[in-house]
Image 1 (cartoon, helix red, strand yellow):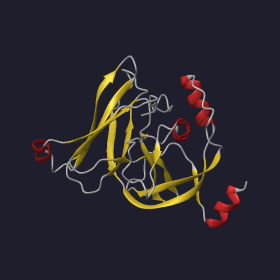
Image 2: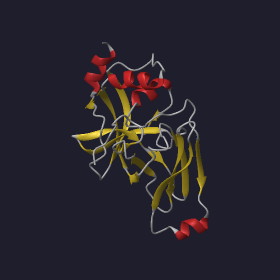
Image 3: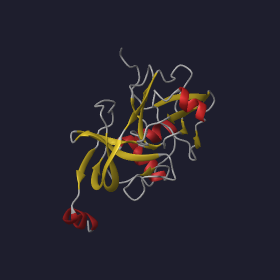
Length: 224
């Protein structure tokens, strides 16, 4: 099937809604064989927003990525697109070894299948026996999710990277929303971020280059 529109769904309000809560014991027992699941609810036709509900019934690993798409938008990882826009606005939090239990659930890690298949993605912390609810906007009644998958990811290490991205992503955001992004990072910037392994080599649509930085390159970059 050909996708009519490959523009990303991804829009976040300035103060996105979230809620982390315990799952009732009866529901855990009923769905313990599933381990984890995801669904969506509360679509608002006026705002284009809906809630993603991420459930971790009994999986010891608390970290997940969310891939989703519609009949018009190819599936990709939530928070993979416009990451630098959300960085500029302070909406997201980059996970690091020092902060693997984030206070901001809209958290981003470097998700890696192998060194040639890696990118930013939302890495959501959902402890065992809990449900995390998150808001995402950009949907329409004829463009609601028809594919969504919750994928466990495993923490590996925290590194400093020199990140190169396409600045047209920021321009595209402004054209679509009318919102200027005055504090967007330079097309090449330094970022400390936690790296997570994923066992699915799919759903990448927004390539970036990540070069791991040593102490010498960090020193040079600091004085540029």
